[in-house]
Length: 389
Image (cartoon, rainbow, N blue to C red):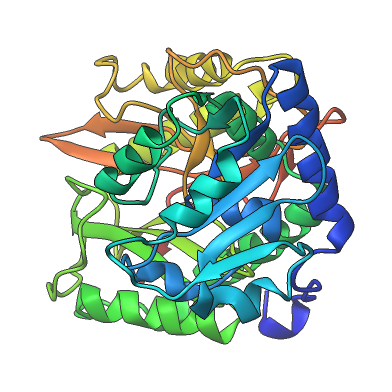
């Protein structure tokens, strides 16, 4: 696949997309007797407003968005973000000159929340407040009658099921990632330093239309690798290496997240066997990825194949996860996660195993759960370990 074959979707969303998200949240709030939900982290703020900026990389300023029981969200943000927020679908934007250590938006937030009795705040796993704890304590001291309950199930539950417009963006970035992996044989050779290989991959993905490649990890060593999250060293690729690259490219704020494995020059039988087991474990995951099954079912289906070579149970913790505005989202394909799969969930299938003398291998694909059958977003990996000569 080349850059010319990739049809670029429209950036951003219609206001109706955000209105639908907000109304779904408000229906869930009403069922729990909430006067609203306060969100403070980038994915949740963007989910309800469309406010997208790299300025989140700076930890200096807090950002607050409140979703009331009815009506549009309300932004309480630093003045530096006002112009961009005004381009969103919301109208009520309250600002202050930041940073202001003595009162970084706390008075404005206090005035907004003071009339309310019960609000939600994401408190659970994979959530963050993204404001100084001292400021939060000061805010709560001034709102002694306010009951703040956990709204994690609401925000994560909504984000786990993607709209058609979201899936279109995910389909596009997965196509870019797939085309980038297809190009790897064109720029990988024996003797090439691994860090140079990674730079070439990033250049390829950007050239094919990715906005950024913020996540690219992997490894290469004789017969396999021993970890999957390290930055690339300058070690030259050698005959008999197994090379793995795992990428999270992004387009219009949505991620792909998958990897590919290759053998350099030749592959030994053990590496070939490990690859075959993982490929078939992924097939088992694809067959199990249907509505009404659970994440535990996905985990069990893949684990049953992995046990052919590795019956240790592994220590990775899970065999895939949700995908969307973040590289990893809820849910988790693990024995502890009984989340029921629904049409429109975008997931990774990521079986892994250990083999040989402390080696490991990981395989990953990106999918959409559909009532009519699973949809692959990534171009399916070759059934046999590819050898780059």
